[in-house]
Length: 129
Image 1 (cartoon, rainbow, N blue to C red):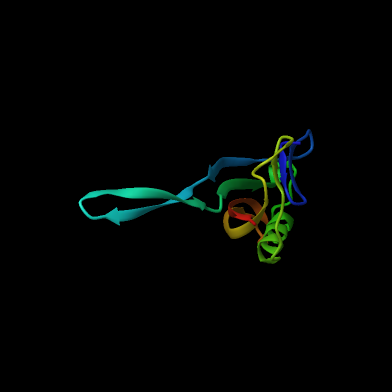
Image 2 (cartoon, rainbow, N blue to C red):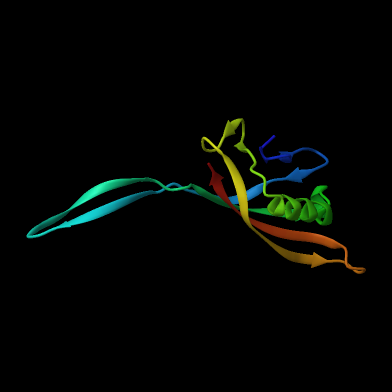
């Protein structure tokens, strides 16, 4: 297993390859500055921001996946108002679960009859606290 997002399992096997690419995670905090007359401002820690993550998934029928089925699954996950664990390898990413804030789908190759042969999905996640 390469990882998972909720029940969606990323894996490499002889009959099926489902992985992600361009994984990016953003960790930030807020710093406030307080102005002082005749002096430099004082900087004060405001707190941690919610973490974000983004990555792409290529759904390719030649790799043993069913793009149409997985597109529907990802659409349902994005609209489910549910938080999911994000795991890479055996390590959970972050301390909390994640929500899908954006699911962008691009249909790369469509076969005769409208069957999707290859699609690329871009997911944006936000930490759920």
